[in-house]
Length: 102
Image 1: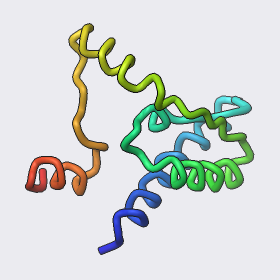
Image 2: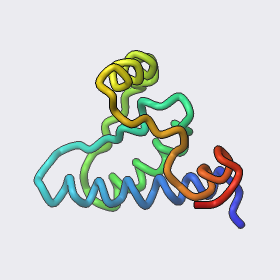
Image 3: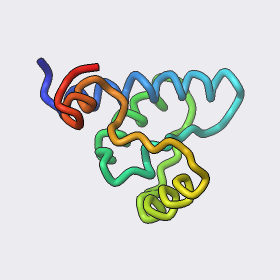
Image 4: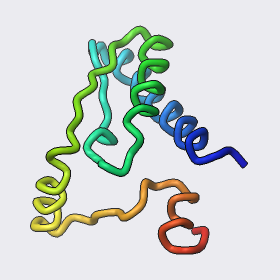
């Protein structure tokens, strides 16, 4: 099994490549990701994966560190009654969070 860093990078790269493809298809100059709001995500890997996706799809990646607004956004979402997921979404993080696979 790949280590967490490699597993996360592969996931980031896959997702950001799809995002960059869609941005190019729709004629956008830039793309970004909501992953950048989470203090639990690995920004260095996100940036590396996004730069690969940008290069492969001829569209620019827009980076901004949105983490300072994380708790404000989380509290606002909670006030609206929105679902707040407590893991990144992959089966590995689910197992780490809840102690078993989906």
